[in-house]
Length: 137
Image (tube, rainbow, N blue to C red; front, side, top):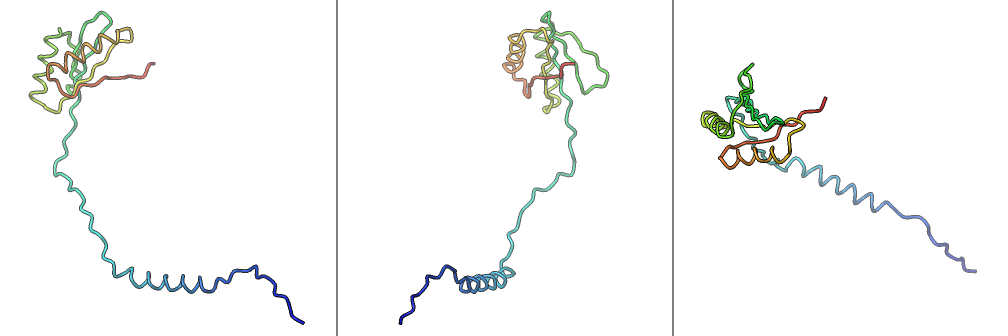
């Protein structure tokens, strides 16, 4: 009488374990032999430059322009014309090239007027012009 074979429902994992152990030994032996790559980090300058406080141009609802130097402590805002604004900002940036300019506007000022002042400054070669936003209170 012949015995019927049953199908085997288990996986023989012994060969896989052997392969895994051989790979582990290979990696453990070769890991110390690999030379690590060098990373060249940027060097830090000897002097840190203090950022320059920007000039603040305020546009009011009556279309008047006011200029205030935030770098000078306690300096009041001065009413200026459009030509005088460009001349003062250009003179300040000639002395300090990193000098920025921010435009602030009253809540009731028209957006087109703000863009007109921004365009006026940019057309006259003023660099680093931005818009100032304050949280409403």
